[in-house]
Image (cartoon, rainbow, N blue to C red; front, top):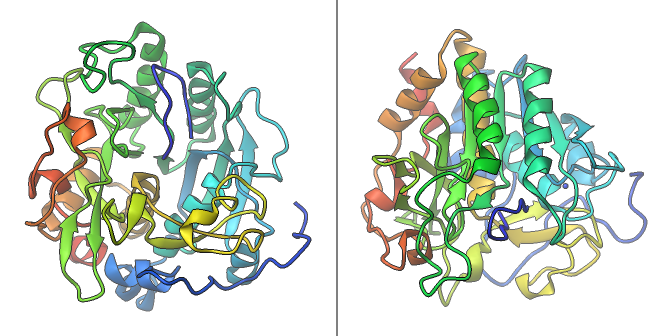
Length: 364
């Protein structure tokens, strides 16, 4: 999840021309592959074997678009579509690549869910809050079962002597967005939002949403809270701890820099694909990334599995179920930039812990 400040929103054709490949590339660092590694580590693979795949559940995902012609989407036969938020264009394109990548995380957990990507507009410095507001209103009007949000506003101070300090109240221009989210939750629609990658992310800090943090699972199975992911006590909503629980997210250390952890599909030539520093070849339609942008749709996919099994679960019941069955994480710490320079240590840094959708399903 990429975020600009102060309150601007940030952030996924035809069949690709060129050497786009349907399988993730090999990279020199440790990396997870979709869908198998993610589904296994989050407890979704066992659910899939019993036929719990999210069938019949509609998910609205707000992000930068989705290019369904990527071989990863074509070969798995995922059911996806794109709606345009006000001001957005080219529904068949994802110029940034972010939405195409992150939607694949959701579908790794809930492969038979019906995903509607709501493409936000203006992926540049001029992006304004109205972009997310229009996308939220479009999501509400679609009447989905679940909403996943991997874009955000950063509510840390801008232009002050202490730029890591959090703002103390919700800016008035964001109140309409908060109102739409509250309306959806009141109507029984769980909303999952990214906690941030060092930011104090809104709407991920709202008490009404399921806030997604990050946990890194190493090759030997050890777990630690990701120091790339945000973890903090909200000043805008006193008493609100962020995150609620965590999905898979790489750390930011000497071995894995800036969360580069999951091999994700993206359109060749998109902003995400063009980042050659991740060890993947440019133009082949894959990127090594994660962040809480990946964690939020993972958790939204888990919500889809729960609702497929028990449709009458309320948003509060869904959150309680996911938190009470998460795998405890006792090592690691959160991103210090998200908590005014002082990192939260585990277990608080990971919230209730790492998502375990199999354990949650066992409680139904």
